[in-house]
Image 1 (cartoon, helix red, strand yellow):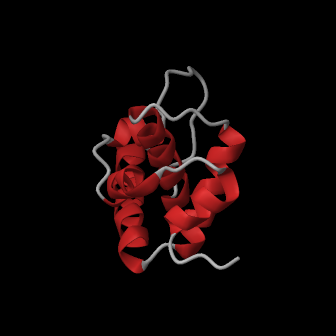
Image 2: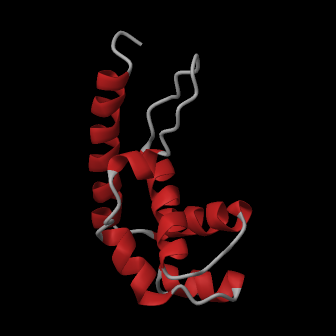
Amino acid sequence: MSYNNPCDIIIGEFGTIFGPTIMAILYNPPFNLNQLMGIRQNHGHIPRPANAFFLLKNALMLAAHQVNIRRSMTDICKIASLIWLQGDKRLKATYSALSDEAKELHRELFPGK
């Protein structure tokens, strides 16, 4: 089976139609960086800064929840991986820029670390 876009992958592999709404959210994520980074209070533990793929995966999870689609984290990770592998330069540039912002936020939250 050949896929023309990430929506086809999601439909073909997972049977849940995320469709263009989810993809539109992924291309223009309305979530703030704290939501995408999953920042929590965990005293004594300094998390690594989030990379572009991690931010995309979290945006997919948040977008799915926003439209009342519930999937396991395993499915979300697999779907995110397929979207990332077939994503165009614009999608990857969006999350690379967010990753740069996440690194800067990480430096502010954890100076010297």
